[in-house]
Length: 440
RNA sequence: GGAGGAGUGGCCGAGCGGUCGAAGGCGGCGGAUUUGAAAUCCGUUGUAGGGGCGACUCUACCGGGGGUUCGAAUCCCUCCUCCUCCGCCA
View 1 (cartoon, rainbow, N blue to C red):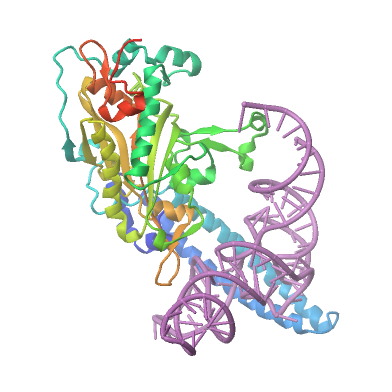
View 2: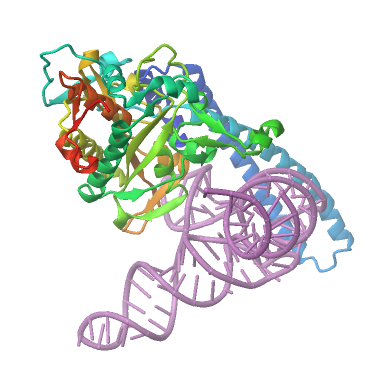
């Protein structure tokens, strides 16, 4: 969420910055400006009335005889004032609600270092790690490799849950488990993250805090108890959402909290299953386990001092990269252009792993710096050491990594002529020493 | 699901129609004492939003929302959350 004062006092800058990411609803921003002005006027007006009432009430309290004519007369006079205040408050609430609605639907402003551009074609390649593996046999994609080995089963997944699900079997299931253990171990022991195992069902307030709601409700799976479906319980706030990413529970850990500056930066890592409805992606990536409704991911989340956000983003990105490096998977890092960034991000790097069968790099981690955008939504603050008022934290997060896509990359990059797949050396201890996955 | 209890400042906790932003304690900060520390003593210490160049000042906030009243932390309604016991349950 943008700061109302900043946004209303710098409307032209905000319009220009949002235009960079393709947001061109100028009328909405103008509305924001005029509402902000009206808000101030009403506040001034209502507060003056309240001041008047407070003074009068104080005088009333000093009248000893509550039945005197003097008292009665004053009381009648104040009744009208009370009504006037009530009307002003009502208008103030209306304005506040509309402002809130606008602010919650405005994306973050791109950081000045974020390049221009409106689609992924405008992303900037920062660096490439490793080399494309070459194959002296006919290359297969992860579906052929995985199904061939009997470790991926899409047909049975469809029987259980429909399209865009996968069942992992045998060494595939173990590989998934090995990857998540490996990633958590690296981040906790080498990178200093505190491990968190959060709920995967969260309240709408958490979804609002990180920016998934209200604008992207269609991307989520929303839960209710059976009897609440009939009772339309969502109106009563009983509803829960399946997390689309561990970013939601991990970041919201510190909602409504004031951290000590000395404790910064705070770094959490956690694994969760992630659930996405993939609304609007019909027909895209329908093959295999690139885009599924349920996938596993290890997430990295950092809270830091506003002065260190930029540096923290580099640190976080490095942590995610180290996983790919240890797994010896060829990848590249791109900086997202303004139009390709997520709603809440101001600066983002994507890690894209090489998928030889698709002859392309695919996102396997997205590392973002949110500035105070999320922190303002969820009131996550810190208290500066040199006294002073609490200030908003900066938040960052990145996948470290998406486990399913890592598994896909391993199947494709490490495939052998005989259909088997070599297990990355770093993972072998987690696979009971297994060096090669062969058909069961 | 049933029956009770409770939500007050960074934390604990009093207050139960006006003098309450709210006693007291803890914690924090500043100072005194001390060679230093502990202990002790004194002072100070919420958040947000208006207005003012500023000293400053005003307004709101006692779980959320609504109501009663000239006036609500205090009374009423409602919702939420947490705790205890019973039931069910991995």
